Amino acid sequence: MTTTASRRGIRPGYKSAAAVFAIGMAGTTLPTPLYGLYREEIGFSELMVTVIFASYAVGVIATLLLVGNYSDEAGRRPVLFCALGLAAASAACFLLEGGLPFLFAGRLLSGFSAGLLSGAGTVTVLELASPERRSRAGFAATAANMGGLGCGPLLSGLLAEYAPMPLTLPFLTHLGLVCVACVIVLLLPETVPRPRLWTRPRPPGLYVPPQVRGVFAPSALAAFAGFALLGLFTAVAPSFVAQTLDITNLAVSGLVVFSVFLASTVGQSLTGRLPERAALPLGCLVLVVGLLLVGASLWAQALPLLVAGAFCGGLGQGLSFRAALTAVSDAAPPAHRAATVSSFFVVAYTGISLPVVGVGALTMWLGLDAAGLIFTGCVTVLAATTGVHLARRKA
Image (cartoon, rainbow, N blue to C red; front, side):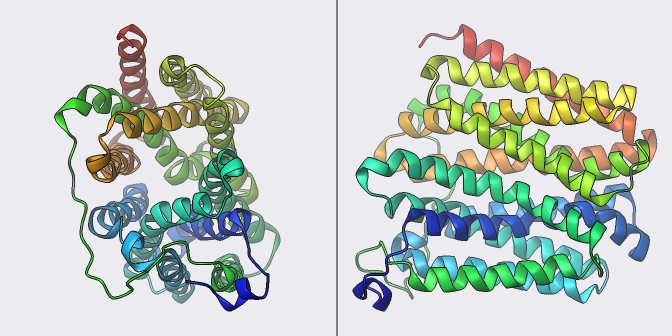
């Protein structure tokens, strides 16, 4: 399908699609530094913060399972428009400030948006690149995903701290960016030859072929551990900065969360430069070092250690995640590749939700510091065990 823009010679390329991807993903982490303000205004526990955050992962997983491959039939542009519409609806829920139901609705809608963008956004960036720029496009998709997730808390933290209307202006700003993204999508060429907009979705479901399970299990565990670290920083780190370190500057909280996603982007960019066999266990090792630094920051109550742990842990997460995804995708037979990769992402997003809810529950009885130490200890053991297994296995 050829758009009017492309007939006139205006063909936005993969960089424009990456910008749309980043804008959409930024909205999913926008509320991260603001949970403390919502707690003061509405009144709820740290456990509720993690449950609200986990509802986002529920939305992502449901979308991946039900319509993760829908853009293959309906076309990339309609799915991107739908994802941006859901992002706008999520921002509207936060703007209404109607209490916990609206916070849950906003996070769930945000999860739906991220689930659609994860597939359609990535594929659109890759398909709009010429063959000689396919590698650059792959990194652009990675940077848009993790970079967008990191820019969300950075943007809202800066606006909430230094601009008026801290619970309003961040979401109004994102709505403006979503409008810009919609214009870009309108100009993007459709990359699906004959899209069928009203076709019935065919849920890919969960399936891992028997011959892939030896690769899938350790790779998925590594992704689970890395995403658990991302979940900790996205849901709990701002509370630790404010309550334990007594740093109430929301821009600092946003910068700490931004650092872990920035490091993840750097880690993913380095994966292709390492031997395939070494990338995944090395990523697990770096992730373990980052987790130990995070645990040390909780014990010593030191911000520099937390930032070091964020960067080191994010670097390890990026290395291990891209290496794990590549290993699973390469091992899966073409007929079951989509279902296998979807199953991999389901495990990863389970890691970003369930462990964090456990931290919230432990906080009720043990306090934030002790709960965080137990979390880092458990995830460190998981990442270390997985890394040792991967290092010892045969190629």
